[in-house]
Amino acid sequence: MAHLKLHIPGPIEVSNKTFEAFRTPMIGHRSQDFKNLYDSIMPNLQALLFTNRLVYLGTASAWGIMEGALRNLVSKGVLNCMKGAFSDKWHDVSKRCGKYAESLQVEWGSPILPEQIDERLATGKFDAITMVHNETSTGVMSPLYEIAKLKEKYPDVMFIVDSVTSMTGVKIEFDKLGIDLLLAGSQKAFALPPGFSIFTASQAALERAASINDRGYYFDLIEFQKNAEKSMTPSTPSIGHIYALKSKLEDFMEEGLSQRFDRHANLSKMTRDWATKQGFTIFPEAGYESKTLTCVNNGAKPGGREIEVAKLQGLMKERGILIDGGYGKLKGKTFRLSSMGDETQETMESLYALLDESLEQL
Ligand SMILES: *Cc1c(COP(=O)(O)O)cnc(C)c1O
Image 1 (spheres, rainbow, N blue to C red):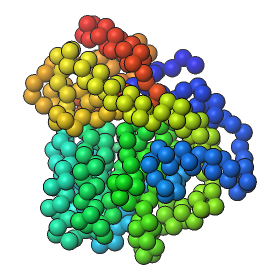
Image 2: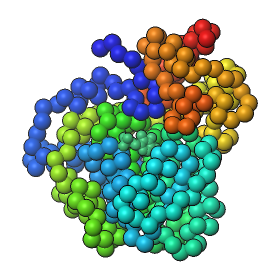
Image 3: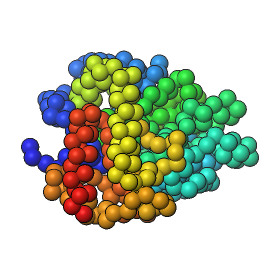
């Protein structure tokens, strides 16, 4: 069907093959067929996350799991590592959940660094931290492996990690990292329709959850674990999403995970090179650029070319493509191009060609 191709950083383009899988006829969620379906995807989910833990399926967008993580894992207090719209919002959500929360705020465009977290955890005020691996609003990827090393020093602190725009695009080894909860939503690098989440939790996270009485029901980790042990979900899941996920996981394995990670790294590099060639600078601090999307600077920081972003978006729309014009306070001062999911060198090159034409017309 003719539609605007999505090059915004989520929701992203969903393939016809995925939609075909999505519309597989329904089955009962307490049936053997459902258990077989869940069992059939578990090995691929575990391979994707490099884990032996059970991987849970949540029927909600990522924020459901993000709120659930706070309700399940924070007792004493949470340190919210903030570097952009999504990570900043988690602080607000922590307070709305009635948790004692403090912020570790860095400037938008900068990463969160382990020393900064260490200094704050040393106060002993926190038994959990939240962090966003790939901050979609700024295009900054924080050094997850270096941050996760802190877990050795602070074993009782729950490390809650949003990998919404990095899971499947970047290698994230859950067990090796030793973190406690890792989550992603379906409409970003998975290239599935929105409304679904994939997540997993450590044994320590389950123990923490068991000690918290008011953790709620819909996102209760203990319920997810108990049900996953029987190849089920606590409540009726979006079964269409699970069929689509099965199809997607098969694609990932066929491509090869390391090839998939390399492809994402290459496409983001190509996008940065395109932007630089066009006279722009890149918004994120050098060395911490996202591998799934590119946040192009357009006056948010000094230096580089500046254009009227809304006009560029309009010209791209005429060419059948939706690009993002900057998130929140970066609106008009940056623009973002997604290269995650099913994009290839060819599809990205045709995007650049259309961007070149549109820029000519400004
Ligand atoms: C998109 C996104 C979310 C939120 O996802 P919803 O689907 O709106 O719940 C959270 N974190 C990051 C990093 C995101 O990119």
